[in-house]
Image 1 (cartoon, rainbow, N blue to C red):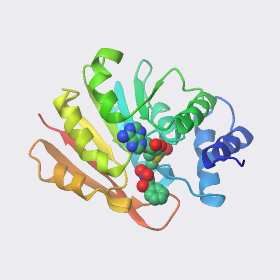
Image 2: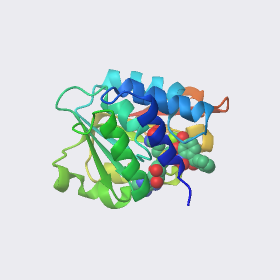
Image 3: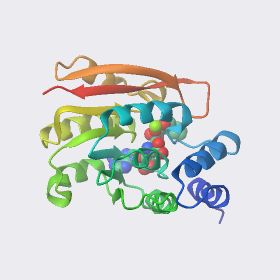
Image 4: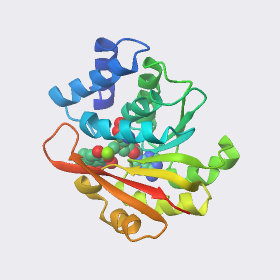
Length: 214
Ligand SMILES: C[S@@+](CC[C@H](N)C(=O)[O-])C[C@H]1O[C@@H](n2cnc3c(N)ncnc32)[C@H](O)[C@@H]1O
Ligand SMILES: O=C(c1ccccc1)c1ccc(O)c(O)c1[N+](=O)[O-]
Ligand SMILES: [Mg+2]
């Protein structure tokens, strides 16, 4: 049987990137996905917006919903201060296995805790398992119909504090219309849309940044 797209992405990293150099890992993946085969990483264009919001927030504890191959985990973890951590959740074991290798290749394994499982099951366990009081930053990039239920779950589990920043990918394409309605009509959030394009394409997409106020 042939290789998978994530396996081919890992091969491209091992061939074209420098071990321990996150920037080269990011470039190798972006080159591969733009010129060889598309993949659903947040990508370089929206990645610049992710970088700038992250730098502004400078989170001590960050959460990512949807790891895939670890591209955005590397983007996030490379910008974290020493002693800061990224917890990233992925329920596809094959994807998680590739992500671990790509995160390790970038030399960021000590800053990233990759947890295998479904976000709906794991979010309520964050406090007991990882001693998390609350998250400073959450990157939502898993299946789009989970954005609202998982945001409500984070609220109900007391994992958001005043100033926590939620950054949601794909609010235009494939789209997360219920999520946009939820955060934009909610007095507990201050939201702003960052226009961009679907990774590696000219199709319109963007990120929604929502600050938790309460
Ligand atoms: C778009 S990909 C993530 C891309 C990644 N954030 C990046 O930019 O490199 C979405 C991922 O979320 C995972 N996923 C979807 N729903 C999930 C859930 N409820 N819990 C955990 N993982 C989920 C999928 O298996 C898939 O790997
Ligand atoms: O849903 C898709 C999708 C739909 C159809 C075919 C391929 C991917 C997708 C596309 C771009 C994304 O940035 C993204 O996060 C996702 N996703 O799966 O979460
Ligand atoms: Mg996405």
